[in-house]
Every structure is written in C-alpha cells, then in structure tokens.
Image (cartoon, rainbow, N blue to C red; front, side):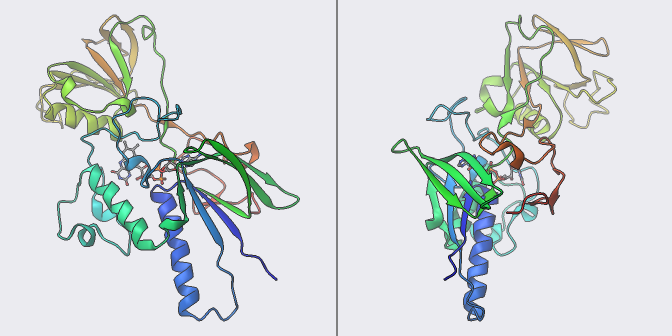
Length: 327
Ligand SMILES: Cc1cc2nc3c(=O)[nH]c(=O)nc-3n(C[C@H](O)[C@H](O)[C@H](O)COP(=O)(O)OP(=O)(O)OC[C@H]3O[C@@H](n4cnc5c(N)ncnc54)[C@H](O)[C@@H]3O)c2cc1C
C-alpha cells in the first residue's frame, strides 16, 4: 500500500505559514472533490526554533543571541512600522481589515503583523503540525534513496533526533546574519558602532549625532524614527551616491535640517567620519544598515542555491522550487 509522503517544513514565519496554508487548501480540495483518485494526504511537520510563530515579527528585548546562545532570529526594533502598505502584504483570503475588525491606516505597527500571522496560522487549522522550540541542525539528501535525513534538536528537553522525509521546504528566512563592513578606524574608535538588528528603543538617541550607513529600507526607516525621537543630527551615508553633502533643507526630501546625506565612508578617525567626497562629520554613534548575508549552514552543501546573496536566486522555478534537485 502507498505510504503518505513525509514533508518537513523549516520555520513558521510568514513563508512557513503560507506553505502550511497551501497544504490546508490541498486537504480541503481533496475533501471537497471526494478524493476520487484516493490521494493520500502527506504527513507534515513544521519545525520552528522559536516558542511562537511569525518569525522576524516576534519582537524581543534580547540583544545578540537567543536563550540557546545562537544568533537571535528576531531583528525588529520596538517602533518598527511596515514599509509597504498592509494591502500589499495581506493574504488573499484574510485581509487585515477582516482581522482587525475595521479599516486602519495602511502602514501598521509590527505588533499587528505578528498578531495577524498568529491568527492566520490558527485559522488555517495547521497549527497542530508545528513543533515549536525545535531546531533543524542538519539536512542531508541521498540521491540514491531520494530521501532527506534531518537532524532535529528539541530545545526544551535538549535532545537530538534524526528523521527521514521525502520533501523539505526551507522557510527559514534570510534576513538574520548581518553583513558588517570594515572601514579604517573602526577598530580604534571609542564611539559606538552597532548593527540595525541590535537597535531596540530609540529614545537613547535623543540629542545625539548618528551616522546611519546604508540608505535602503532599514536605513531610511531608522532615519525617520530617529528624527521623530529627537536625534540632534543624522548623517545618512549611501556609498552609491555621488556625494553632495550636506544637502540643504530646501532640496532635502527629509524636510529636516537635522539630516544631511553623504556618500560612502572613507575612514573614521576617532569620532570623525571622513567621507569619500572629502567632507567630514563628527558623530556619537554609527548604525550599520548594510543588509544581510544569506546563510543556510544546516543544509548539505549541494542543496544550497547559488548565488546565496540575491533576492532572486537563480535556478529556482518561480523563486521557490530548485530546478536542479529531484525532491
Ligand atoms: C527589519 C525588517 C523589516 C521588514 N519589514 C517588512 C515589511 O514592512 N513588509 C514586508 O512585506 N516585509 C518586511 N520584511 C521582510 C520579511 O523578511 C518578510 O516580510 C517575512 O516576514 C519573511 O518571512 P519568512 O517566513 O521568509 O522568514 P522569517 O520571518 O525570518 O521566518 C523564518 C522562521 O524560520 C525559523 N527558523 C530559521 N532557521 C531555523 C532552523 N534551523 N530550525 C527551525 N526553525 C528555523 C525562524 O525561527 C523563523 O521563525 C522586513 C524584514 C526586516 C528584516
């Protein structure tokens, strides 16, 4: 008799929840059609290392590492608001309006996203498939048997088991391991240099001079928040800009004299940032918003899709299914 396929899903963030929901939909379809071909619904286990669903939308006060000593998965600061309208983020079959009960503004606070994802998982009926506080340590694949062997650690009772699966869905997120650039003077300065993932509350920057390095999503968002929280001065450095610092308030899209833009950093001497256009700014803190490195160190080397640092990795059909793998 045919066995149910065994499916392992790594992670219960937005992607893992979508994957679980797709299986719920498949199950509904089988039941609605009376399952004329006798298809066997697979056995699904989703392993989530955190104690809760929603991935990076889980906020924590913790700096650096999680309670098990690994790099913290959560990267949110306390005042984070979504950076695309909620209407572009919501699931087709469950709107934010339906979830919240009224139509609130398009840009909502991070806590509402967490709440929404929790509710969507609950509604899908697939939450019992999620084993929380379990981490995937290793995934190996045999081309001969076409089976994945997965090493799973139970973080609560501190034990490791090995299980076999026919398919593995990697929904483990890719914005975790920061890319930290090195510049002359970083090693010798006394000022604070932190990465955006380590920012929590913003009040500590009131009255301070901050250099924000990197002007993509996190950089721009943090500038807005720092301005709201009464920062004294922001130097927003973008290594791709030609360098016309300081930008005057008149042609400054930020509409604040407290913010000047700068090109890439050349070096740091004490508290003085020297930019490639020769202009200097003294600052108290540098916040690095310099993106993330993709890392899937638990996957057998030949299962990793290259290039690893790309929003659209090659060799993935529709950005999801590996073209080179047979499972
Ligand atoms: C600061 C910031 C702000 C953002 N703002 C927005 C926004 O406003 N709008 C938007 O659409 N997107 C935003 N994003 C993008 C965000 O990454 C996606 O919206 C989405 O939440 C990603 O979901 P995911 O499931 O792919 O990854 P994650 O949310 O990272 O979830 C992955 C899950 O996998 C688990 N996991 C990882 N490794 C293992 C393992 N080995 N074993 C077991 N479990 C594991 C993690 O614990 C986590 O729960 C933002 C990203 C960042 C970093």
